[in-house]
Image (cartoon, rainbow, N blue to C red):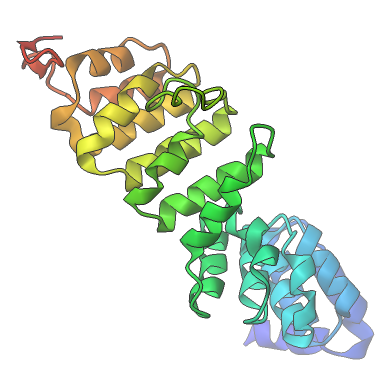
Amino acid sequence: GQPAGYRAVLAEPAYRRAVRALAADGDPRTRRFGMELALELGEYVRGDLLRTALRDRDQVCRRLCAERLLEIDPDQAGRLMWARSAAVRELAVAALPVDVPAARLVSVLADPARMVRAQARWQLYRRGEPPARVYRRQLGRCGPGGPAGLVAGLLAGLGECGDATDVPVLLRFTGPGAGPGPEPGAGPGPVARPARVRRCAVRALGRLAPADDLVRLLAPLALDPDPGVAREVFEALARVAAQVPAETVWVGRTRTEPAVRRAAERLAPDAGAAPVRSSRGTDRGR
């Protein structure tokens, strides 16, 4: 057909420059066609592949070049782990050797992209090392001034593979007022954490905390000044919507942020016509 004939013409040595031009075209479909053909013809050397995988503006082209680079040189996985594309980072993690040290996986275990974190955990699972143990160890080393992105990623990852025993660890990162205060003589209580960290901690608590403890742990955080944290609180409380006191629902419904109000309203959508349970044991309307 016509596309096959066009491809055959471009494969001629005299048209290799045209293939390169297609691979740099502004139209995504044209660019991807040119990139596939350039890779098929061996037009890209390792430096080209690495540069494109790291920096190209088209995600399909980035992935194509990353796949080819890892086929010919798996040792480039370490460099691709820092790519801006989550798909490329996932490929890089999958290409790491089985015996890669856990310390080298910390950055990808805490990656912003869930699929990259999952791939990093698989690296640990397949050699019998529980990922939750690595997350706990790394979070134990995170002080108040730790990098917010790293801490948030570690919390997100622990929330995906931990269990109810991780609740005390997670509470440390929700900020003041969450959970019991410090024991006498134990030093200062919880410190304020960046909103990004608090959001991930609350989301993880919503997944891992026992249902009977959710209201006690999360209701105080409905007053968090960050709307993202408050929204996570109400979304987590949806697990136990019937147990949420009217006072907590009211806090969400009276906030100014639409996303928070919607999340709170989902807990008791008929509160305007039906009673909502009060924490004092009585029923009251809106």
